[in-house]
Image (cartoon, rainbow, N blue to C red; front, side, top):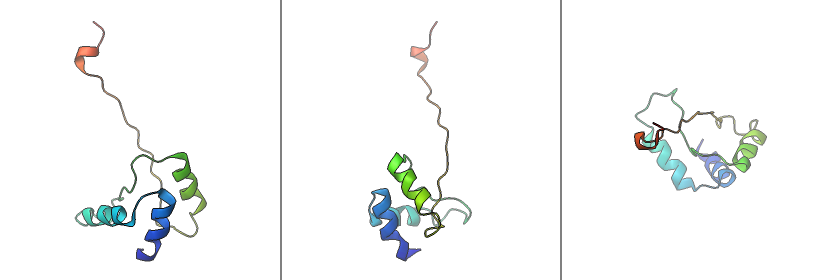
Length: 77
């Protein structure tokens, strides 16, 4: 995994240090828990992940649906 970090960092436009910090922060998580490297993926990030599935099998993309909750003051009455 360590040898892939420079390639992953370059492809996702993050630093190797950022990835290492994410991995270190996740050491207490269960081993099956994914480590989020970049929460907001750009179209270029998606293209990188898709095009490198064979040579970087540890890299996956997870879709997360987020809800935008408005403050109660902005609700129509």
